[in-house]
Structure formats: C-alpha cells, structure tokens
Length: 352
Figure 1 (cartoon, rainbow, N blue to C red):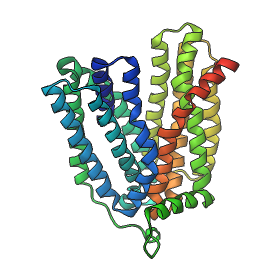
Figure 2 (cartoon, helix red, strand yellow):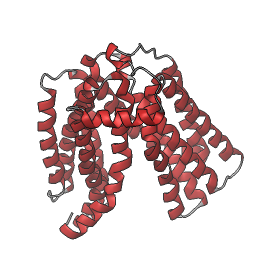
Figure 3 (spheres, one colour):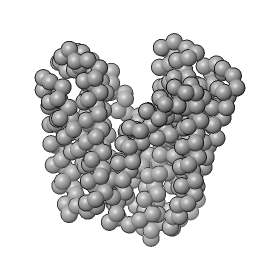
Figure 4 (tube, rainbow, N blue to C red):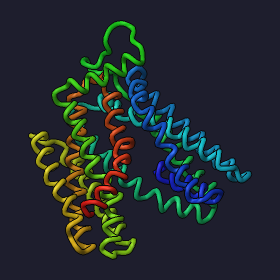
C-alpha cells in the first residue's frame, strides 16, 4: 500500500510543478536504478542477513518519504527534489526486493512455499487496489504532502512488523562456499548457478518470457483495443481490474490449498491455457466478454506464477535465494516494460 500511495503522490507532486513530459520522466526515472542494481541487491541479500537488509531498506524508505512530506509541507521544492527521491527510492527497492525473496527458507519449510507465494500475491493485489484510493483521499485533503506522509506512515508500520519477524539460520544446504569471495564473484556465481540448474534455469527463463507475453498485452494492448473497438476508458479499467481480481483469487486459492502433487505438470498446463486466454482477450468484441476472459486469464496465470515461484524456491539452494530472487524481480520490473514499444509496433503491423 505504501508503494502505491508513494507512486501516486510522486506523480501528483510532479504535475504541480512541471509539464507532462517532465512528469513522465519523474515517474520513470526510479526504474533505472531498480533495474541496474537489482542483481547487486541479490548479492547483498546473500552476502548479508536478508532480514537486516529488508529492515534497513524499509527504514530508509520511511525516513526518506517522511522527509519529502515535511519538505512539501514547508515549501514548494523544485522538480529536482522529486527526481532525487525517485532515484533514491529505486536504489532502495533494488535492495529490498531480492532480500524479501531470500527470506522464505529462513521462515518456513519447502512444504509451505506455495502458501508463501499465494499470500504474497494476495497481499500485493490488495495493496495495489487499496493504495490509490487512499492516496486520492489524502491528496484531496492535504495535497501531495499528505499523501507522502501517509506513505511514510505505512512504511513505518511495515518496519514495526518487520522488526517483530524472527528468522532462523540457513538450512544445511545453504552454507556459502568456503573461502573469501568478492561481490563480482558472487554475482557471476549466481548467474552461473541459474544457467546450469536443470530446473531453476528453465523456470526463470520461462518466467521472463511469460512477463513479455502478459504485461505488454494488458498494459498497452488493452488501451489499443479500446481505441480500436470504440470502448471508453471504463472498458480498459474493467479488463485490467478483472485480470487483477483473478490474480488475487488465485493467490487466495494457493494459500488455502497449499500443496500440489504434480506442481510442474500443473504449472505447464496452466501456462498454455492462460496464454490462450490472454490471446482471446483481443478477439472478443464486447467489454463484458473481454473482461470475463481477463478474469479467467488472471486466475490461471496467477496460479501458474505462484507454482513457478514455489518450484524455484524449493529447488534453489538457500545460499543463492537472494540472487535468484533478484533475477526474477529484474524480469518483472526491468525487462517487460522494454517490450511496450515492440508490442505497439507489432499491433500496428498485424493488428491488436
């Protein structure tokens, strides 16, 4: 929720002092350090206690965002402050996300990894759904400063909860290799581990390709489809909301069920069916039909992604969890957006 409120507050604050081009720049600039430093964050998570990395990065976010709220309350800083904040937030995110991914083996056993994935999917959907209305309410009464204050307060609350979390030592297979190593060696070892692992490697590659096949059609394709069919903006909202609801339902289902006997087979079958459902969104002529298919696609792809994440965590040696989580996160936040122009060009040549 804090992330969602922060991003809305950042965009609104930029819109008060700059034009559309500068607003887009401010909103996008944080993705650069997040993508560039994500693999470094995975090395940091594996070299040091991921709990400390998570707590330290969350504390940095809280202090930074509350500082921005105070600055906006006292004066009207220029665009430079928002750019600096966006860059710094991206750096902290690059540390936070891999460390979170490395915590599972220290919290529970492999038999609970599906539930861990399901819960993470569920709370992420709840947070991204509840955050924007909360940000809008805060900005209606106190402009951007109030929204930044709310985001900072949410980060403080999450920090308090993180401080209460107790983690165990690495499992026996998670001890790092003997002898001193360098950060560069740790990074190359992590990439080599992923490339050579017969299960983790293909799953990570499959996840990256799946992001390329899911994110551009939803984020760009829904807009182009609505324009082509003469739907209004509400039609885009219904399609995206339906997919998000479906993904949230799948997270709840994974949390309740918890175990799958043949998770690999189920993951592959669901990936094929979900792919067909995503393609069908562009074929149906009405908003209700497209939204219904998007709901099913969200449910199927959500279960597929949750099972893939659990399989990756189950088969990844604990000492490499941070670096594997970093590569996975990089495919989500760094690679998929790069395909937006390619998808738009393809839609122009072949049709939406």
